Image (cartoon, rainbow over all chains, first blue to last red):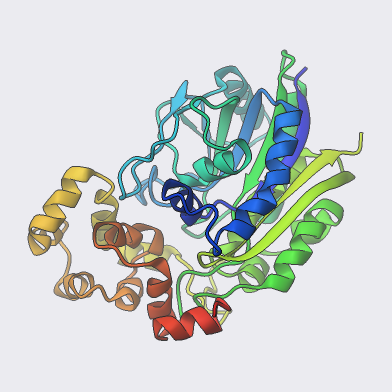
Length: 280
Length: 113
């Protein structure tokens, strides 16, 4: 069986990718943000995973409003970085963990989830940026990926409980996979930010800090919150944080919080990460 | 999740917004294609006409009125592609949403000095 070797949570703000593209890593605005991720990169180097399952949302790049899947799973051999309007980014394409992806599709449907299954699709900053934050800018990525898209753009978005339940199936998928792959799970999005409406620019540092500890040690609290609670506490786009629950639901009830980092604002967002390991 | 007005000053992109802003967002989505970006730069109004935008929608796009585009159902993730063709920092778009000037927005909302 494959093994879950860690659960990671991280923001996926597009400006992080832009900062890297423009060589702004060590500027005063960005240095404290990137420095805090070094321990996460170090953890990843030592963990030597084979596969990264990345849970993220598309931002109007790979999906338009003509078709809005609540959940989608990639089963492609390769995922290219999508052109988000600024032209394609100079980062390597992502190789798909095709067999594990199909196994996930089988398990999800068996457990009464019904995802859109994507054979040919590009990926936006929602997947790119977390990979860059933990793996840097290699010529070829050291892991294969299983992308899971969650709709957080058009309401109704899925409930926190549903995201958690998907995490339970993800765990069952990995543990029943006939291979010896070492798998990391990346829940992405958030933390607090709001881009639309008169409350735009809303950042809730206190709630963000509480989240980084709470997602490790008190996930029940966040699983029980409503979508409205997320919007209220973390902003309209901060509700993306529900995607971390897919990661957390796949982990043990008790986990070790190995690393955490918080920096605000990154562009208009409270940005942060956690590295979790099962107590096992 | 139907009550999108419960949280003050926080519009959610729900059914009504999605229907209202469909054409506007579809036009913006098309800017992911370099050929469409060229067409937009070459003759913006003709490009907007291709997507059947109303006079009100065209005026909002052509004047880069970010607040009005959102009011008309534009979703930020789509209309951001306009700011890729004609560069505007996202914080300036945020300031327009908040009804503040840029410097004031950076200081008061984002805590930047």
